[in-house]
Each structure stands twice: as structure tokens, then as C-alpha cells.
Length: 553
Image (cartoon, rainbow, N blue to C red; front, top):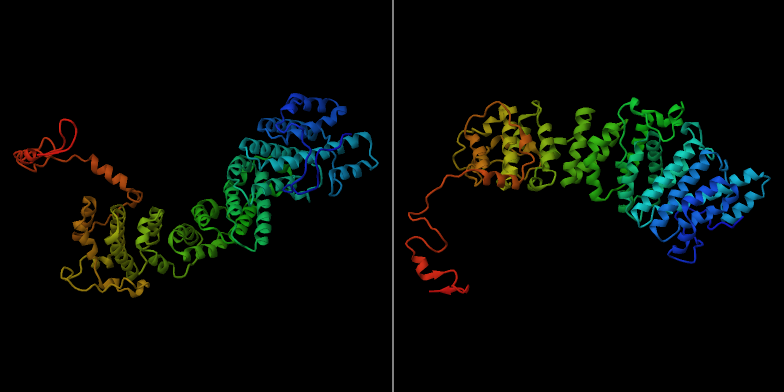
């Protein structure tokens, strides 16, 4: 037998010295080796088994075209051998050089057929390790092709297990191979987001999804514990990208697609049970959120938390501490944490101490310019919609918002004014803020703007004079909305959904589309620049001479 062309037994990330063809470009090899022909010869005759080395050598070529052909050939060859059960089944010899492994293996008292199966099994292991290395290839097509080939091997191994997979609860699923693939996707040195997107379609399969979630949880626990919880931006972003591609089913009847069909038939298979899928999903996210996150990733997690994560957890209340900590951070992170807190408070009846106190302190000028302004005011409107809130609290919010209105841009004012009016409509006891006796006389405002406690800010002793000031605003829409403060409010609430997403561009386009009647500005209409009004300016100044140069008369 020809000696193997590479080592085995080392971890996929370990650098190994490999025998290559003399021509570094691989052009000479391309003339001698055709992957499809080689695969056909190996499958047709066991005497041609040594040709598999040529195929494995092509996997290490410098040319992407040759590598893609070799990957396709390896998939056809080894999937065929797995289907025909032509690979040795059982544990391989221990670590060390591949030559040592093969020598040790061949010393066993095996017949010719078993020796052939063992020989091809060793070549299959070498192929898997090389494909794992190709997941780091600079060419995206090579990475995608290697990933698809590895997952085909996972499916083929699942139907013809090569070794014991640790118990009947996993139904013979090749977890070791899948865990090696997940480990490469969770790289700590390079971005694997694009590769994770290619992996997304495979996560629609129930057994793949379950075992990927289990593998991600174990990898997170190991890597983050080794780093002592320090922030690892590249690794954590890769983990988040992979985890976001997991789409959980909502019903047991939806668990119908399996990479290994036997998983669905096995009674003890956890992948075929929705409760086990949700438990694996919950454990994965709890481990991920246990450690400190980069600020940018913190925001991405909070954006998805309320609709993509919380509904699929067995115990959503386990994330209360995480959301409380995020709510205390301040700024945009606190605004985004409101979504998750809203779900926990309204759907799971969890109590959050001093919630309205912290919500009141979020009302600062910066919130008017935040990217998530529309989301914040939508949730704030929901939190303040209860008619059982005390009058002093509602008055404090109305007064705080009216004070913010003095420094707000027009797009924010079109949100703030209807918001204030809705608060007063829901709580008639706060109408005295609009029609306080003697409010037209200049007096000192008793409202304490620097007081962080709404119960101590004396909002009920004040009035909404700030809204009346906006009746002189330059934007006609704002001035018109502010006029409502001088007349009785109707009982019907304003719908905020139409103004939450309003932008400056939309306001400008609306103004430009309005038809404006012509207004005479002077007796004699000017027909060109610097003329008109009797031509006085035209007699002394002109813009240019006949030759194009400036002139002054």
C-alpha cells in the first residue's frame, strides 16, 4: 500500500506538514487526475484503492477550481462507501502519526475485506480533517462546498453509524462530526458570519438544530470559561450569528424534517420532542447571556430578545436579571430593554420594582434623537395606558414631556404633543395642567425638573405652559397641534402609529407638495436678478459682461 500523504490524530486546527505535488500551481496534477474518473475507478475496483491519495492531494491544491472538484469527488466517493457499508465500523486506534495508526491497525488479525474497510476508513478520517481546514479557506465557494460535503457526511454517518454515539437518546446521530463543524463556525480569530448564513438552511432540520444547539452550548461554556469571562468580540459575534439562524418550531406537529430519518422514529430521541428542543434552546441562550457582551452585540441581542428568544424559552423569567441589568445601563440599551421587560411584565406577570421611576428618568433630550425613538414611545404609551396609575405619576410624565418639547425637533414634537394629550384624556384629574387658574400670569414654575423622583417633582402644581409656547412654532403642523391646548380636548385618543416613524425628509416632501397661492411682494414683479423696482439696481450693477467677466458700472 502507498504511504498516506498526511497525518491524522491531531486537532483540526493543528498545522501539519503535508506532501504536495512538485508543481505548486497544481497544473500538472490536473492533467493526470480527474476527480470523477478517480472516484469511478475506486468504487469499481478495490485494487484501485490507492488512487484515493490522488483525490486527497487535490484537496490541498492552491487552485480553488481543483479543490471544488476534489470536494465533489470526495462527497461522491465516501457517501457511496458509507451507504454500501464499506468503511470500518468501530473505534480507530489511538492518536499519533497516521502511519503509526495504520501500522497498528493492520497488525490486527483482520481479513482482506476488513483491512480494505479499515484502510478506507482512515482515508475518510483524513478527508474529514482536510474539509474542516477548508472551512477557513479564503474562497467562499470552497468554504460553502466543504461545509455542504461535511453535512452530507453527517447525514450518511447517521444512517450508517461508524461508532457508538453515546446512548440511544441521540439515535445514532454523529454528534462528534457535527461538533467539529460547529467548532469551526465559532472561530475566535475570523468572521464566519457568511458561512453561518449558508448553514441556516440545514438548521431547518430538527435533528441538526437540536444537536447544533447542544454543541454551541458546550463550546460557549468551554471557551468563555477559559477566557475567564473576558469579552471576545469576534467569537461572540460568530456565536450570535449562528444562534440567530436557529428558527424554533411552535408546535410538536411541525417536527417533521430530519437529516437522519431514523431520528424521528426513535422513541428516546430528544430531537423529535418539542420540549427537549426548547430546553436545548434555553440552555444555549442562558450560557451565551451569562457573560459580558460587547456594546454593539448587546444592542443586537436586545432587538431580537422579545420576539425571537423569549417566546421559545421554557422559563422566560430566567432572563429577568439580564433585562434588569440592561435597563440600568442607560442610553439606547435601556430603551431596547423595554421590549423584553414589557413581555415579562404583561405576559408573565413579573414584578419590576421602581419600573416607572426608571422610565421617568429615561426621558432626556437624547431620547428624541435616538435610533430607536419610535420603539421607545410606542412601548412608553403602552406602559402608561393603564387608568389605574396615580395622578401624580401621569402628571409628572406629561410635564417632563412638555419640558422636552422646548428642545425637540419637529419630527419629535409631532409625537410628543399627541402623547401628552392622550395621557390627559386617560386621566381627567390631570386636566388642571391645561386649564390652571391664573396660568396666563408670569409666575415661577413650581415644577422641579432636576428631581428624579416623579412623586417629588410637584408636577400637579404646575401647568403645561410649554405646549402653549409651541403655538408660535415655525412648523405649521406643530403650531396647529399646540393650539389644542387652548380648547377642550375631545375624548377620542390620537393614534400615534402614523407619526412614530415620521422623518425630516417626509416633512419636507409634504411641505413641497402643498400648493401655495401667489402672494404679491412688490408692485413691479422682478423678471431677473438685480432688476426690478424701476431698474435702479440694474443701472449700477450687472452680473457679467458680454465676454463673461464680472463688471461694475
